[in-house]
Amino acid sequence: MRVHQLVARLDPGDAISNQVLAIHELLQAWGYESRIFAYDMDEYGKRFAAFDTEYRKFMHNREDLVIYHYGIFCDNHKYFLGTANRRVLIYHNITPPEFYDPFYPEAMRLCRLGRDFIPHLKECDLALGDSDYNRRELVEAGFPEEKTGVLPINPPLDKLDRVEEDRAFLRRISDGRVNLLFVGRIVPNKCVEDIIKLFACYHYGVNARSRLLIAGGPLATYQTALLSLVERLGLQERVHFLGKVSEQRLKSCYLGAHYYISMSEHEGFCVPLLEAFHFGVPVLAFAAGAVPETMGGAGVVFEEKDYPLLAEFLGRLDRDRLMRERIVAAQYRRLEDFRPQVFAAKLREVLDRFARPEGETPGLPEATGEVSP
Image (cartoon, rainbow, N blue to C red; front, top):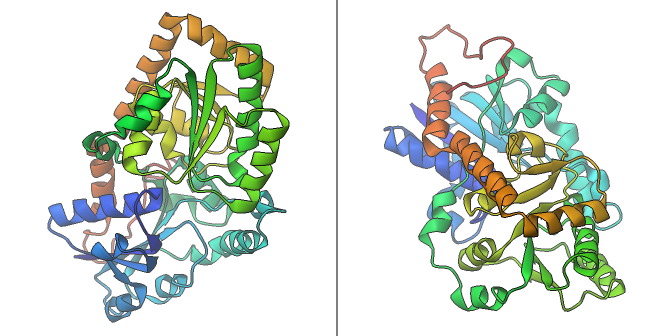
């Protein structure tokens, strides 16, 4: 069986791209003929993918399987809708457009288009979310529940283990100050302003020997607003916007961090939470979107953004080594649910549904909504 994957863009460091490549590697290891097609890609992506126009030569084959990764509105949806291949949708979620008002009208337009288009994709053989939160959005959009399931993100944590940390940077941030860390795109739904406000309470009220590290590619208009907030709070020397970082520097950020903070109000999964787990960094995260599901009872999940109270809690963790150890131990246990073998078993189950004799309809066990290992 040939398996094709369609994606909007393929580039390094992106969670959807990492999922595509993880599936591709497993398919090849299992002897499948596997191809990736992308609307856009950088030089890294060109090592693995062809442009999506090349997929057209395979669209007539009813025995092939195509997996469409949907996380942004893209014209290559027309190939997914028009193909004779058997069709699997993997939904990675799309940010609600209102988060981009007033920072980026074009992003608002694309997010609205993307979310409005979801119901048009429901005539597929199987629709998977990379979290149950995302799966439920598909059901709410009209997808038959019995044809939905969950195929979680396979976080490439071993990839960071294999790279050498940026030692000079790690030395600079290992100067005795407590480092709070956020990793991700600097965009409005991440609510980075709330992280800054929490840090201000912690820095001024609990521990003046502290800094905030913010690693991720910025939306310029949003970051300008954040820089103004930092200046108003007098934290210019303590809040560091690192931009999009290399894997070496990202690893150094995790190795040098004392706490990872998430204030995001919309997440379809949130891989950096698991990266922080992997490096033994206690995570404090606001309970929004798929965050509680990803955390799985580990870390510290809170439902109210009470900055002074959270700052006091961080101060307690500074002093209470046993509590920190318990938090970190629970995070390590949660990572067991995301082992590569678990992901491989769930992907294998998906593929097995399409290896059945002709006439049997692929689907999921009724009422579970899960692709079980």
